[in-house]
Length: 209
Image (cartoon, rainbow, N blue to C red; front, side, top):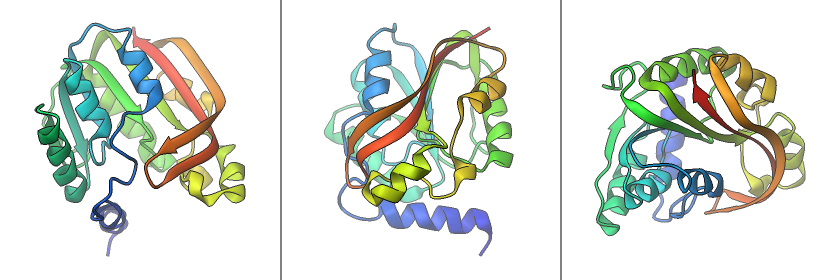
């Protein structure tokens, strides 16, 4: 089994359970940031079971999303139906998604963790899909989170430090953005079955120049 297929199989297994792995309510930072914006077209990569995509749709956004897990997509569509909204959700990676340059007014990367060698290329591709003046909303575990996970495995997050973020990496990956907020922060997570407890995250909001 290739690394990509094993990664996909891991997420399919996690999302195959009846419960929503990370709950059905949106990420709090995303909720906060969207409340400040005028609705438009938003993209959510690595969207999993759809909690953030469905929330954005209920607020009036035109939502597109993708993930490598077909099981995640199935549950996202179920959640969308329960909330009487429609989302455009594709199964695939950043090489196969059918979006065009400058299609989106916003991109939200919420716990979208990739190996560093892939992360830079994925972030580069995603930037092209965002219009000039469009907004990036980001939350992911920091490299310091590895210590929090040692103390409480229930807080979740990658065990491999290469999959975690630093502020320096984010500013390098999104060098052509104006950062209006960028912080490493200790937060209390209560998101479904797999994000519970105190952890360390990187949060940012930035506009494409």
